[in-house]
Picture 1 (cartoon, rainbow, N blue to C red):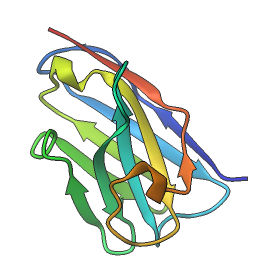
Picture 2 (spheres, rainbow, N blue to C red; picture 1 turned 135 degrees about the horizontal axis):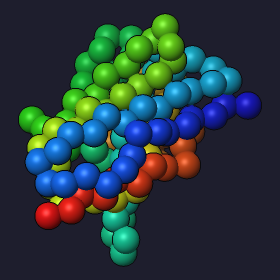
Picture 3 (cartoon, rainbow, N blue to C red; picture 1 turned 30 degrees about the horizontal axis):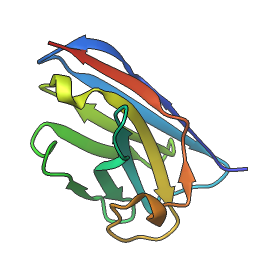
Picture 4 (cartoon, rainbow, N blue to C red; picture 1 turned 90 degrees about the vertical axis):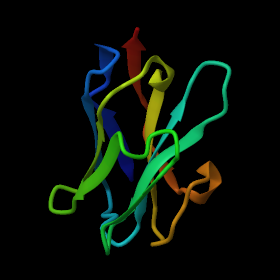
Length: 124
């Protein structure tokens, strides 16, 4: 059974940093694509960033580019989201997701597996 488990969320102040982790079990995604999404109350789930594991190619939403960094540790089957210069508008439930295919994917339906989410709250 495939499981994705996020951790690292919390309450921080604007300008602070956080690093989220997503540990996968049940299969490896080193040759697939893994991504991060977020969902604020009353809003649709939106893409944050992703990484194609086999080549390490990363891509980001415009709202976070330059502030957030996605990375992978294939040996640990774990993905990370480093978030710097956090803003109150970054407050949301953050999800990791995984696809068995290696391709740029930024829509929720393109992913095969999802974690349960970890809350990030940024106060002003």
